Length: 249
Ligand SMILES: Cc1ncc(C[n+]2csc(CCOP(=O)(O)OP(=O)(O)O)c2C)c(N)n1
Ligand code: SF4
Ligand SMILES: [Mg+2]
Image 1 (cartoon, rainbow, N blue to C red):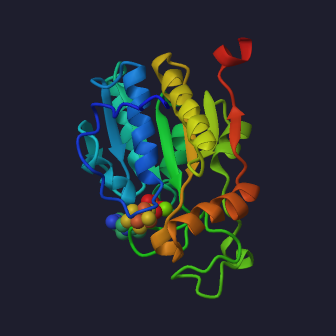
Image 2 (image 1 turned 90 degrees about the vertical axis):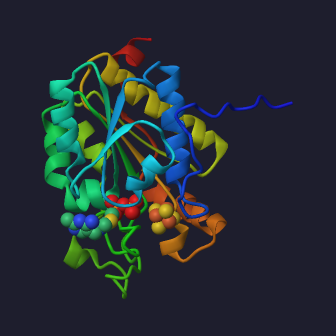
């Protein structure tokens, strides 16, 4: 019989995301990692504006709802004044990239000892599916009704690759939630990111390709298929900057 997966004590409530949304899976994984790293009593989440702000509906933990796009700047301040506390900025693609790219990139540039988890669902989910920096070329959204024209808007950003190549960050990866295999890998990435912070290694980022069936106007199953077939070829999964500890192992 398969081993039962214990619900982490940090999760005290049913979460309120739409059926088939990726946010809830990621939050569950974060809670599991925090418990396994004995950080469940030592964590604050600066959380972004968007569906990421619903994290508090499921997790019983300290958190601060930040102004739109500024969670990585708030995380920086929190970490600098309480360096022993684990700080995870939990943000959407619209929040972290479109609206907050300055704060997000500055935290990575300075190699702040924080972790950002960015939920990339290729749109502004909470407000009804507007185009964001990660919207795919040709994707129809409420603000790109003819499909995203990258000649006008620029190309979708690959943030984990960017900071891995350009800055001396500690850890950078992208995962997804579309299968048990991917969920287990994503958990490993999240754990690595938090461990890097605990060890004082510097900035860690984990981006998650996450379905938003409501705004993609798809069934939960079709939304998972879209991630696999359309998003992963543009946004490859894996680690772009590995931790020294793992490299030497
Ligand atoms: C300063 C400000 N501008 C705009 C908004 C409206 N707003 C709320 S959520 C959101 C989009 C968030 O999108 P994303 O970060 O991708 O999160 P998702 O809902 O997709 O998880 C916007 C623009 C706001 N709350 N505050
Ligand atoms: S709107 Fe999209 S991101 Fe928000 S809870 Fe629903 S499925 Fe998830
Ligand atoms: Mg989004």
